Image (cartoon, rainbow, N blue to C red; front, side, top):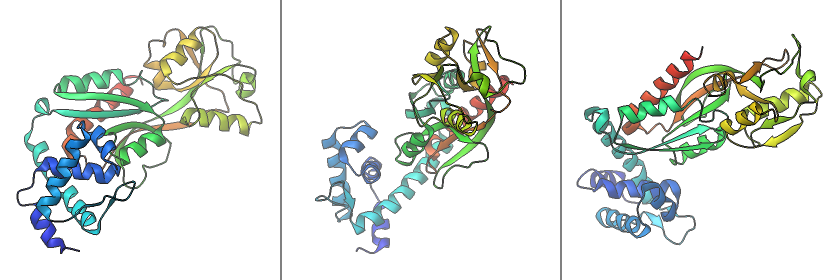
Amino acid sequence: MQDSQVVLSAMTSSLNLADVEAFIAVADMRSIAKASVRLHLSQPAITRRLQNLEDQLGVKLFDRDSRPMVLTPEGQEACKHAKTLLASTAELQAAITPGKRMAGDFRVGFSTALGDTLLGAPLDTLRREFPRLHLSVASDESVDLISRIEKRDLDVAVILLPEGYSLPSGIAGEMLRTDTIAVAVPKGFRFPRGGGLAELAEQSWVVNPPGCSGRRALQSAFDKAGLRLNIALETAGTGLQLALIEGGRGIGAFLISVVKSSRFRSSISIIRPADFHPRLSIWTAYHPNSERLKQPIRALSQALKNRAGALG
């Protein structure tokens, strides 16, 4: 293996940062095809950048015969220094670039259980404060969003964790708010004062697909009470679920702030069974090496706090 100081010296001399970025993308994704999607480049362009970097360093960075691609020992050493180099460059850029001049992609993920009801105003804030950023938004379960952050497929995610839980090792973030899950029902729904899940056991439920934090809490509560959860409809999308509930096609479990921030807040009622009051915390999660995007990440976190705070 080349001496690490030789590799470091070469990397910090006159390298093309675009070549370094392509190298890190392939190292993270272990695939030229996946790296090309992440960087919005063609596969031949990624290959050329890798070859440029290998020629300048004078080493082979990947074992081309392995699938998925594997770093050589020299590649492992170079990757460590390359990430440090790009992080330092990003810190410099972030320190001197005003928000309105920041450009590039900003990939946001949000928990399916949050839906689109809570995020509208915060996304409007991002568009206003960072007009040159290209926003892309994806919805998924929190555990999958964390995995996508680790793989650098997302820049930031808004996720849900049970109250008292922390982010996994290797993920940075901020806890924004803790909220209670309650039951959303159509207007005029009759529920006895002090009633519990037993009074809802015969109802049809509209739920998210398996993996959702809210559904998991609901199922756990029914199991604990020895009751059967009658799932009538399983579908992703908070807006669609609330519309179905408004139309009398079932009831569902949601964070109170999600219902209050939706357009259905005046046509749907919230009830709180005596034996069902789990709490979930809303977090922003991002990769520790996200210095280039710390301004929009901070702005998103603050806008979410403001939005949730306004709901009480």
